[in-house]
Image (cartoon, rainbow, N blue to C red; front, side, top):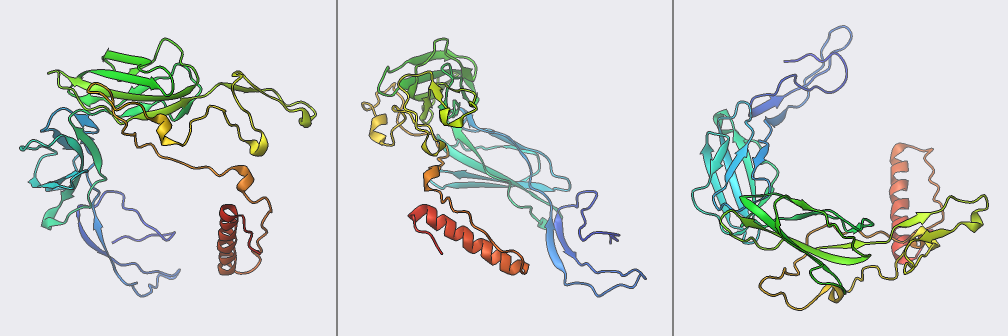
Length: 337
């Protein structure tokens, strides 16, 4: 039982043990006279364990799974899910904070969760899933989708059990194997020779201590764009100029956007080459998020005025309606009245 002298919320000073709890609350006036208890609320206390390893990719088909201890936990449960087949493996009654599977896992992408079980069999929620790849397949982290660095750093996640890595980079419509490094001992590489502006594709794979070769990573497609310098604005803004260090750059100031004549095409066929050989990486794309930005000239320019002098509900309704009208105007060119 806890008396809260001010405010309308309460957080315990220490974590509650894992379990089912029933909570009531009531108000007390200045004279000490209490009101009636509010309707109760049932809650389950206890946070899921924090995952430690494996965090990414490993050559071991029987990896060790490790997590942080949860106070008052009696046992733990482990859940493995094959991302491609949907097959599941669940282990219960684990008393330690680590577990090694006895049956080898197939070479594939997997995800795992863990939860804690308290006294009386009360369970926490599952932890957030963490993906890992059996077979040592790495994932490229950098460069980003667009950079003006002509000597970009290629980096990837560390693979458990890897002895070294192989990096392959092609220029789309240009030199194939413009970078091909076979014996990289670290998880990053920066070329010593500058790359020209254009579109590139990169892959990396790992080689284990026993010479086992992983699948190539998913393809990472990125652009190197010319460095563009803006001159300080003159007193007369009508004389504003933009200077490109690349004479091939096509500059468009309408809507404050900049376009290149050789920017990456949306036509997927432009990124294809001959079918990959046994040693050549595949065309499987990395799963980088795609974000579309509307050109400025498609965004309505007419300001919207909303009267919020009335009650809150009316103002909220007006805001919702106007926002929807604005979105419809952007997408269709039609303007609501």
